[in-house]
Length: 364
Ligand SMILES: NC(=O)c1ccc[n+]([C@@H]2O[C@H](COP(=O)([O-])OP(=O)(O)OC[C@H]3O[C@@H](n4cnc5c(N)ncnc54)[C@H](O)[C@@H]3O)[C@@H](O)[C@H]2O)c1
Image 1 (tube, rainbow, N blue to C red):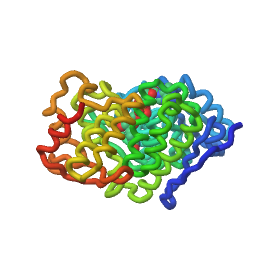
Image 2: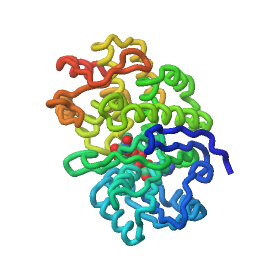
Image 3: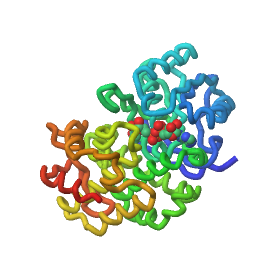
Image 4: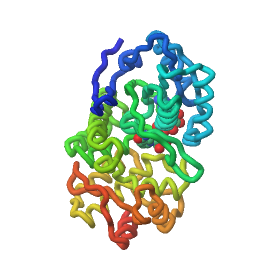
């Protein structure tokens, strides 16, 4: 059995929890049951790969395991899938002592967390993230929810897990495009919080692309530490937590205007970060050299960085109008997280209207 390699604490008082990062479910998943029921939720890609192994471990840890599998993909972040999880919970007789276990990417995590936070007004919730994005971002911090036909993440609750168990070995089966998409969020942490971490990424492009386990252990841990620190300062995003949206104002607009699924979330955020860096040069005196470093690193990691890599002919007007309806916009005026120096950003920044289109035109 592997040792737990690293533990990161999310310090939220009586709602605090540990993130265990290592290799093998056995070494990272610490929760114990006592005949308690666990509803193990996964998706149609992840369940065949890891569902049995995770269920066996939960059984050995004295949980009675019920299983639910949703179709893989964003469409499962829906009220229909919430209803189907509630159906499983009721037929499996989940009670107040039960736990919902999310085994999968951000879709399974957000969906299961919302079900856990609302079923019987809240049962325990355990995150077992299997995509890079879920490991470094969505499984930490307690944002859960589903989409409505009218828009993404419109219904949800802040609901913290009792534990996050990150088995890095699961990344071996993650499709390359999904893996690299998660890498965009990794780069984001360097840009917003930690310049030496950004440098470390620059020096480790080949091991990162090769999914070197040691490098992965240290980058996933560092990202979790940063997210934990930000969330501990501002759990409900009334202030500093907004910095995690670096690159997301344009990123969300790209996803929205191009149709979800055309570009993966991290791919859209990658172009959005290049755009935010360009705006930062114009509006906050961010150095052109550091903006170029961001573009170079994202490109070296195989991520899109320019207009030419967006789906055919997405017009600026469509992006501008999608930015106006962003949840974070104030009276249809988009706000931005912008860089001052590498590793430090400001949030809620207004940008003059003419600079918005000029910065987009400046993208390659
Ligand atoms: N709650 C938050 O704070 C937060 C933050 C960021 C993103 N999100 C949400 O996360 C979602 C995106 O998450 P995602 O990128 O993980 O998408 P996802 O859950 O759809 O997973 C991506 C794909 O990879 C597959 N997959 C996952 N792990 C695998 C593995 N180990 N091996 C093989 N295949 C695997 C999945 O089946 C899916 O097809 C979005 O809905 C987004 O809104 C939430």
